[in-house]
Every structure is written in structure tokens, then in C-alpha cells.
Image 1 (cartoon, rainbow, N blue to C red):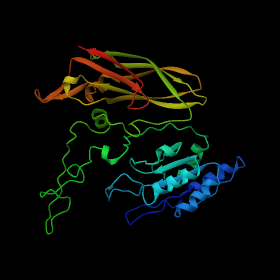
Image 2 (spheres, rainbow, N blue to C red):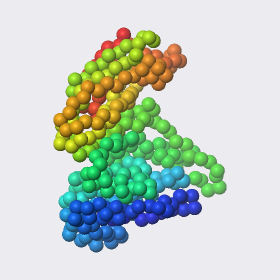
Image 3 (tube, rainbow, N blue to C red):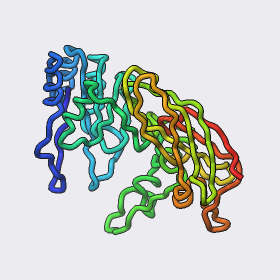
Image 4 (spheres, helix red, strand yellow):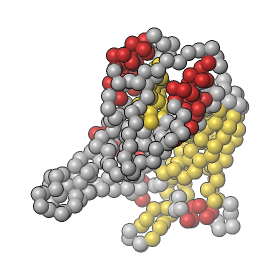
Length: 336
């Protein structure tokens, strides 16, 4: 496996009691009578040779980022992409662990069978990853953002959108000027995952995506709107089944799509439910949007510029349920 280079500054808090991933993997593997070898990854050819001799290769790569510097692109830090490609070419059973704070491009995604988005795990990242990679703990996390295939697919793909331009149209401040860049948010209401839905862009991984060592099936979607003030709210019910051979936890997500006349783009996340199921087990899941939720969060509403207020539109609404924003079940309902 490889280990990302350390980075820091006077503004960075260093984890002094960090448990390294290689130590945790070595300790966990010993329980099964297996060995773990380590390579720092600075020499790509040497790392590939180490990987070729292993049953499974684990490549840990990162993006060095923080609040004091904007990302120039969506690429891995240093030789990350080159390293992953070399190791994957040497060993088809390669697991890539991403320690990043945002989405990254994955030009090598077709060459590896498994990618773990680990974010920044802190001091106990080693034991956590060892437990997950050896299957002691099942994955259940979901992506809080869309992962695009490339920077060109994002709504900030032009200089006017990011990083912004000066009055002369350039991204470089004129000499002697104290002017700041102007940024144009031309995506309008197509924010986040709605941009990809409305533009018809297939992302690398959709918002809400996340796999585990088991699988889940959705069926029997029902929608019951009861919007009166004395009622309990809006209910979405569906059946969730663990179709795999391991116990697992699914975060089922509910989305609503407003009538086309409202001008609201795409689907909006309105609720979710975390459900743990044994192999073969089914459960009827209910996601309830309380009257207070519907009223205060405007879940069924749009802002009407003509009347200058929040409005619930008459018409046909889309109801969608699944394990990500790329939902498994859909139906339409009319709300008078």
C-alpha cells in the first residue's frame, strides 16, 4: 500500500497520535495469518513491482486542501493518478482509498474494482479503514455531493464562473489595482446535483451514492399527502429488501419534483431513513414529512416572484425513492 505525503503549515493542526493505516492493516491481517508490505509510493515503478507480488493492493492517495487555498482542479495531489494507474496495471485486485475533502476526477476508474471515499479520518483513520477493508464493519456511508467525471462537467467550468474575472475580462489582477474578481453564478437554481439532472450530464457518482458488502431492492412506493394543519403530514412508504448475503445498513432517500410550471429544476431531497436489515429481510419503510417540515422548509413550495411569497403549486408532482439521487422508484401524484 502507499501512504500520502504529509502537508501542513502554521495554520494546520497536526494529528500527533495518528494511527497509520499500514500499521492497522498489518495488525488486522496478522489475525488471519496474512502479511502486509508497505511502499511509500514516491517511486511509481517500485510501488507497481510491490503490488504485482501481492494478492491485493491498497493504494492510499490524497488531495492536500484547506480553507486558505482554493482547488485549481479536481486532480489528486502529486503523482496520485500515475501511481493508481501503475498499481492497477500491476495488480487487477487494487483498492483505491481516497483521502480528499471534495470530489476528484478518476481517469483510472475503469481499471480498479473498488474505490473507498475515506475523506479525512483523523487520528483513528487506520483502525477504521482496517475494519472496513477486512469486512469486520460494513460500509453504509453516502456521498454528500456529486462526483463529476471531469471539471468540464461542473457549473463552474468557465473563468466567469470560477475563479471569476476582472473588469478587463482576465483572471489576473491588473498591476497596481486593488480590484476583486467578479463571479457570475449563471447556473441559477440548478445548484448541486440538480445541475447534472437538468443538463443531462451523467456524473461519475451521483449525490447520495454509496455501496456496501450487500445490496438492496426497493418496491411498492406509495405517497399519501395530508397537508391539513391538524394532520400528521406527508407520508412516503416503500418496501426495502436486503438482497445480499450480509447484514447491512441502507440510507434510503426521498426526492420530490415540483410541477414544470414552477420553474424549479430537478428533484429535491426531502427526507431519508437509515434502515438495517439482515440477509433476505424486508421492511416497509415510512418517510414522514411533518406539517412543520412542509411549512417551514417549503418542501412542496417554490418562490413565486409575481406574488412575492412561497407558493404550493397545483399540478403533478414527481415522487422518487432510492439509494441515491439516481433513484430506483418513481411515481407521479396530483396535489390540488
